[in-house]
Amino acid sequence: MLRSGVPNFTKAVPIPLQGNPELNERWVQDRIAEDPSILGLGEVVLKARERSQPGAGRLDLLLEDADGEMRYKVEIQLGGTNASHIIRTLEYWDAERRRYREHNHCAVLVAEDVTSRFQSVIGLFNGAVPIIAIQMKAFQVGDWITLVFTKVLDVLSRGIDDDEVGEAEVTDRGYWERKGSRASLEIVDGMFGLLRDVARGHSLKYTKNYIGMGRDGQPDNFVVFKPRRNSVLMELRLAQDAGTQEEIDAAGLDMMDYKARSRRYRIRLGGEDLARSRDALLKILRKSYESESRLEDVGE
Image 1 (cartoon, one colour):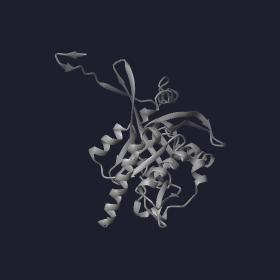
Image 2 (cartoon, one colour):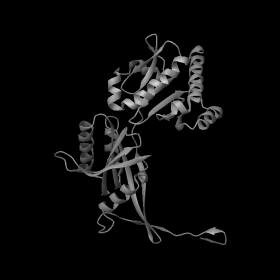
Image 3 (cartoon, helix red, strand yellow):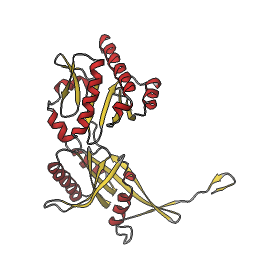
Image 4 (spheres, helix red, strand yellow):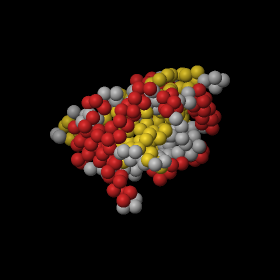
């Protein structure tokens, strides 16, 4: 409500959770399970709670991204971080990645107080182990209780440098059928059919990070594909401009974002997109290929 055009104000009162008989760890789990997006990990869904680990207790929460590619092992700690809880978080991450090798895995430690000492300790692992540290605070606002989650340590970015794609570990089609699905590989096949009209003499190159393009035995990754279970993430190298964005939007394609550093549009393709948006896909593929050729001509 407004009073004289000025928003009403009420003070948010911090509430310690450790030792609170009502706002305990189970209560926090319930809130995250109801809406996992409050953690700030993006579009994720709940896969399991109190998931048993062989000889290692129970994982608080298992979350998965919308594409089924990344799984987050979430451990909740009321109060401050401690060494035993960090070790347990890493143990659960390791156990899950060994059992489910077809997924990518990330450890997530949620605590009321991620101390500077333990930020440094966790940071030592962040390079060998993908780990995220999130600080959690509870507040009372009027008659309501709210939780605020702040990411204080994120996973180190390991983006693929196009100049290094020739060194990417080579795999085969079967690897991507297991990691994605046959249906998603059919989408890639359909896109490659379009590419034959755009980039003659190219072939698909299977690596462990993506399916790229090759020409005369050399990588030529103006477009790469990352198959998921029910979709394919297509990354097109192309300078960002309003005209391309309008074409993508008009075609009804699911654009996820634009990576300015690598100059790539990231578009999620479903099984129906090839038939529904064939002309638009062909146009932006050709634009990407021709743009890449111009970049090569000027020595980039």
